[in-house]
Image (cartoon, rainbow, N blue to C red):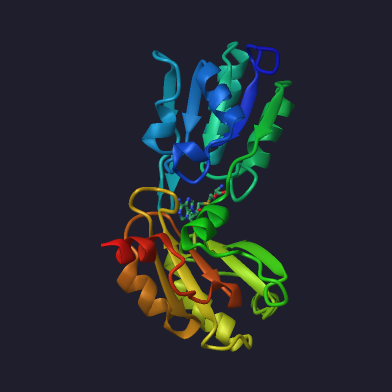
Length: 256
Ligand code: SAH
């Protein structure tokens, strides 16, 4: 294949979980890889697309449970490419959003390896689709802010709360489950109204997807009570106000 010679690396976005949300390019690249390095959030249905006998290497990281550090992952990818493999590095969602893509691209380029990126559907898009809502809303949500609320163990979350407390924005907060209390407190302290709508979406696009609507001041309670083990997004802003009858769950509830 002309765009995937031996010794090349593709960083491929695996999307939010549902294999039908892969791009056709991602699917083709996965099928033609000779080795696949994948993250914890990449689902089994996506991994099944690889050719039989292909080496599948789990290099997953979930917060608090780092199985391989970034330097090790970089080295593994580079070594595989230098050995002449066609390397797919599969990442959840879009590789360029909270995906450490730059480190891996730089490591490849430093070793003289050609590395390219295949984009993917990011979790915020899948979450909005699951809610049946738009991330932007004419006149009310003119901005979409993708932000991570992940802090290193034992460190304070260091975000510009003043800038985030923007009444015209939708905040899509990645890796925010553990920080729900800090997010709520700091945004309210920075002037965001306590009744600002919040949507919580867990396992977007997967069969166990769940969503909940709450308000900013109740977010800590809601996150604790409602969220399970799956990856989750906290989505804050006027565009996230509950709208009758538009989510999957609602439609399902109405049918039964
Ligand atoms: N590159 C990924 C994000 C990686 S950070 C992307 O573009 O989506 C990992 C965080 O993404 C998780 O902690 C969670 O906040 C979010 N996430 C990933 N998949 C998700 C899903 N299916 N549903 C909800 N949130 C998800």
